[in-house]
Length: 336
Length: 187
Image 1 (spheres, chains in turn orange, green):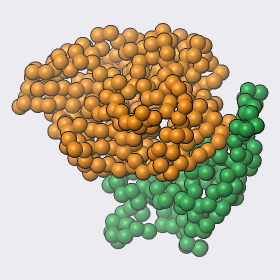
Image 2: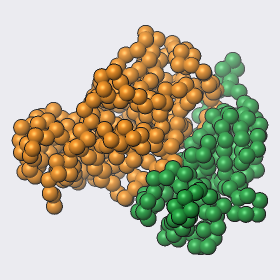
Image 3: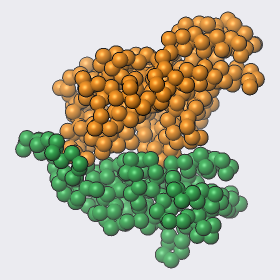
């Protein structure tokens, strides 16, 4: 690991002073916050990330899980993934989120990783990790090794000629389906970022993962009142039964009126540079009976622009089947 | 592995930046922590992992370095009672924390019940993953979310055993877990 300096501020204001004056987004910043460290320190060992200074925010509080005034739940940015997943209120009101968190990483990593850090974890693309290969995300302008290389785990939706990496989080897929809101503190005070606007598609600037500025700190993630506790699930398909990243994952949440779907939420992981939602696919389900045929139709709509590469075209069919199964489980419909 | 002082030697030594003197990171910082019940103070570079601090600075080589990337679990220790990967933790972040390693589980010559159970069930072959497996199992039982053998497999999935001793590892943990529920207490 390269040399860096380390600072442990004792307040949010002091932490923000530690990153003040930095421009651009947090992805490119030379001074970075560290809390769980599970992804950042790993990337520093791989020489992929090279911060000059780490600001340790792990003792700033921000680790509570509290009710919001609107009846939702506020997840502290520094609450550990394991504490969030096993929180009784999260389990009872947002079971899809609890399931998604517990589908990710290992127990040790979940004990370390924080909610804010989960949002900021970086892709697991092999080429991003390997400094001996080109990667537009790691070194803008060098090209994409995955595009014509080994791309079995890569994106089938929303990718560009510059990058076909995927976002690795499970938690974020459920947060996208729940339409969570990210609370952020910065030099100009607080602001909120709708979850759909937090992560971005690669376009021609794949080195930027999120819209969080380099001088901002995530303080909390707000969950709306509606948690879809009755009719939701998180389905993760991967190469081994545990402790592996998703090839495809689906967060499916339904509001039902008898056997009719009133509203549907669908978010996919492992298929794009960000958790993937598609309003057209969700609209396709609204007002329809919960049936396998209707689920298949929604999956086809969602995947209408899906594009496979040399090794990952299987993900398109896999995603269709995973969507149908997740929706069937959420609706309580028997499925093959 | 990091040396006690100075930047860690890497394969990219020729690309190491030369920070301007005024921005030179400190070579050592003081950290005081509780280690296996005793108070210890050490001086480490900010980039020293807890794993390297344990093995190279504190001579506690029971905690193993496997992948050094959080993928194998050989480096699992307990921090404030919770299992974590010591390879992905900075030693300087441990100020004031309580760290328990495999060396801290036994009481004198009396092994921890999980250590006893691993011996009894022959839950290892080469033994390299064993300290991490046992520390992880201690953490898992403390967390209290495992009920079935499948739960044990899932919640221990962060600890790899390349010898494939998994059936006996599950049996050893199961025995201690059942003993606890019968006694209603923890080891």
